[in-house]
Image (tube, one colour):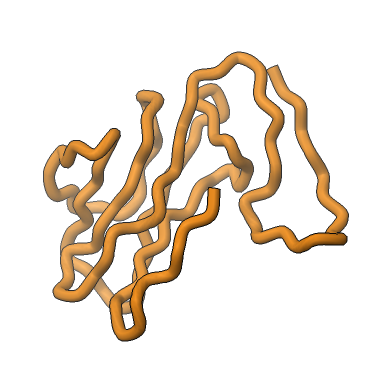
Length: 111
């Protein structure tokens, strides 16, 4: 789904998904990267709304299904938009990039 932009003046935090398809599925070996402007000493990761503490790195490979968000350890840094990683066996995937009406898009039906 759509995730609103941060309020004016707030630090934006992005959660990048690799491979760049939605929905993300565990069997794709999904890597998440928490990204913001400037350097950060740590990133706080959340799975299903629960923090598992500050991680030194801003990238990790997902091993459990759930809804993931992140926050860079910097004043004014906001929470990223959520990314759902499922363990579904059959998925219809679309590219992560923004799509506009009239765009040609490749869909992937995978199992």
